[in-house]
Image (cartoon, rainbow over all chains, first blue to last red):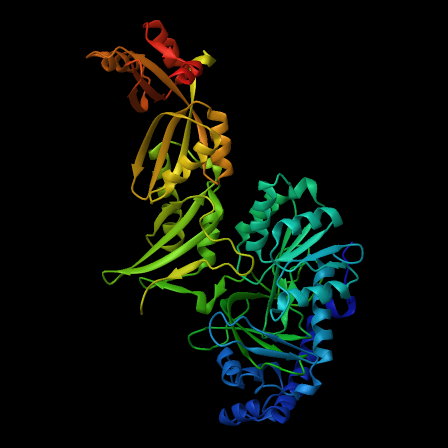
Length: 434
Length: 145
């Protein structure tokens, strides 16, 4: 039986959902125009008035909002409410520049929890589950986000945060965690430590589900994780600007349901900004329909994905986004060819000889880009014949060439030498001085 | 036949400073003695092959130290240290269509030449070498070297 957190909302006919979105969009543009100097100025510059926006088709008249806007108005210049109305702040890690600050009213926090409550229910988690939250707690949205979402559905939370891996494994066994939420990289690291300590995730724990996100990961990685640990691995989506972790796949694991009463989705051509059709791959643009403190209008998330409005087997009518291929700004251009680290991962994970960790190193040698992929081989793949090892490098090289259309160098490195991560894994080193 | 098979320890190592020192330190701590040793170098990496007095312990120690390591079955042949010794062995194996994957040799304290061989068909090789009167050494001999 399929369970819903809010069956009426989650199964609402698409026509009614769109009507609701239209109403919410109209009040949203009025709201931001009146409450945010930033948006008033932005709309005026684009010569668009709130009354110009009547239907969903009018959405494209509105100007985009960018991450740089959040930085330029640091810390709270885009907010629609004064600070004393806020319940919480979160601040991004600032890995790619100045950090961005997001504020939440009480209602914003409630909407965030609701979003996750629907999501967790959709993968069968609720009362009776023990959810180990191994995302970092603190300014990062992952830990606290999952924490309150899990409490909302009535699950028991084990707030381990990230790090202290052996203790995490002890607690996982002793308290009987049934689900874990963390980056896929951290779960891989945790499984590795478990193996070293003679612990089988499959046999020695009650873990049945993993909620993995905060970094792109591939379908092939899912297969590996599920086969190695016996759990179901679910993709979760969210970004700190939107709230944090928000939406997951349902039990059918075929795209992430994004709640249409909270978010309006578009996919655009990143170069021209033109809207693309359903099923076309492009940059995700989100308009928040339910946020009070920091609503975002046509926010250019930068993630590359596809919107899927096909009916889902779970009966939910809300659109799905298909697995995120990477971020528009993660895309590497190597000798004029676009490469996403996620594509590299997809290829590598289909090869049983290759371990879970890899690093992409891009260099420029004599005016020519070179791409080296460092991999670790699995113990089973090791042969003491040099020709076998060179054959393995060639096999990996050919598989990558086939998909990337790019000749890359494959370098085998010793087991354990590629850095393991407890948070977001760094998978690219770009040494080019451009 | 089993007793004629020698367990060689093979491990993958990146070609960079300090790797051998790391292995040697681990062996010293575990009291493992190396009897024969070779590195097959292939650019960025090398495969280290060695015959040691306690192969199972060596495997465990290196594995726990994080190395990619395996035990490979090889043959140890006691050769007459005279011209033509190697040729005879190669002839016998070649005659049976058994390929030599790699080989390395060393001289023992008793001034005998020992040849370590990995072949494409180890059981076939033992049979034909035995038949040709070639002396194969075993793990006990390795302990005593």
